[in-house]
Length: 204
Image (cartoon, rainbow, N blue to C red; front, side):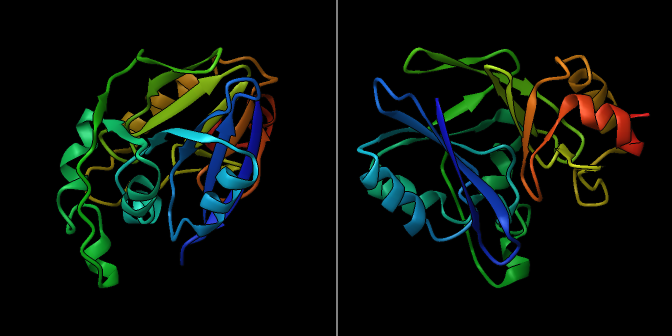
């Protein structure tokens, strides 16, 4: 598998492009802003974008999804509990930033779902707390954590739909993953599960 990170949008979201080197099938996680860099990488590496995976329904993680879907035909997938956010600019917070983003997902995800990307399996972990439908995506000791877990911190719970006790339960699920698991969060630098168990005050 190959991985490339892009920092997009005014809130500097980490958007990731993951692909299988043999089949050239790719998945994009959280295209948070204009996707020109992602489109250029798809072309440069001769990739077919299969999925646009949204770890949750907030504006800063979905801003480029419609354009990316239009350009590639990829399927937009989100957990069912966040589908309503995509349909409502007030709920997805795009209205706060003067935009009216509405996205119609092609696939609603649930905990335990598995998506195929070439020979790789992308496992969906429902990790609510930041939003009701927040997810992490796990594959081959890689974890795309969205706004559930950051390096040294966690996602905020003071926005509509957030709940600290629920997020705490989700975090306890993540600490069961192998320490060597590399974590690619929605904001900030890469980390590992082992490092977060040592230094993250929210995992103590």
